[in-house]
Image 1 (tube, helix red, strand yellow):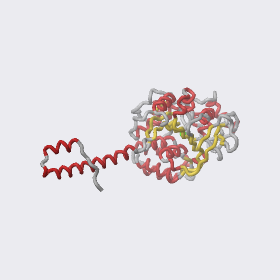
Image 2: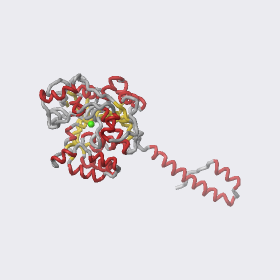
Image 3: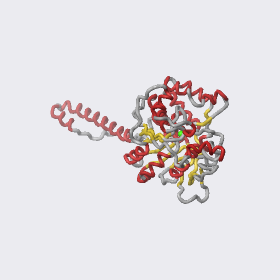
Image 4: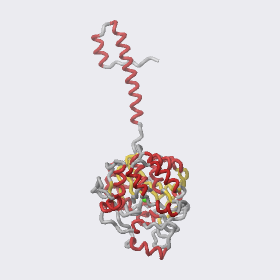
Length: 386
Ligand SMILES: [Ca+2]
């Protein structure tokens, strides 16, 4: 195959000083140049075609090295993800506690460049935090007795929470920008590119779309952990914790006409168990004393000591694993979804309609099953780096 004619300026300049005997050499030189240019030309499009990193905002009720914590570390360390920031929200923890936890873990992986924003620290229903204890007697409870932030006093500040939990001084501060304003600003700066991963209560997201509805069509998609559709609840027989803690926030979020909503409910999450065996295997992978100490103080430890057969789940981890590798989903169905906000024993239960949905509901991809092996591989790989 003939090499395409190639006559760059350098070759004509050289011709002037080459003798006729050297013309053959010149021709050879130009041909080599043509091959080099051809090869670089071929390489350039390949490099330009490298998929852009997925821009992600994580809205989480952060905890140490479990659930939200592991999800954040997976996203922060994944070469496929650009974690724009961590928006802390009430739920498992008060925002002060969650902020301390996010900072402690980002310090551990030396990613203090990822901003942490303090977000909504209240729930919609007035007096709810104080009423949760009362609800137990009025409405009953499910197998999971977790009260989250309603189960302990609000810390005076995130720094107090940090010092109390880690007996150390933090090396980074949360951003001065509120989590809600951060979401609005980042979505506008990166239209159609931002995935919001909501794995606490949905208050940050609900507040953002209410404050500035113009961001709704600009959000690429929202990935949630929450709900129990064709499955029992955990904190009540019907309701799952993230929704139950602030059902009104969840209803606002799910009824927002986002381009895409993907929900990982208990229907998917409770098919993957976190056991003592799993804990031990992960503990053995950790090398950094920062995380070894954190994992040794894990909230599951007293539970495992009391009963080695006890197990729990890794809810939020599934959302992070999905963002990193969308092929983990094995079973799903797209249906209109809603949240029951009637203050009753079914407060916070979630509904998916195979019949006629109520006005105002939106469709969501409801995940029923993920590939367990792929999820644990991601978690194992993360722990190997820490
Ligand atoms: Ca969570």
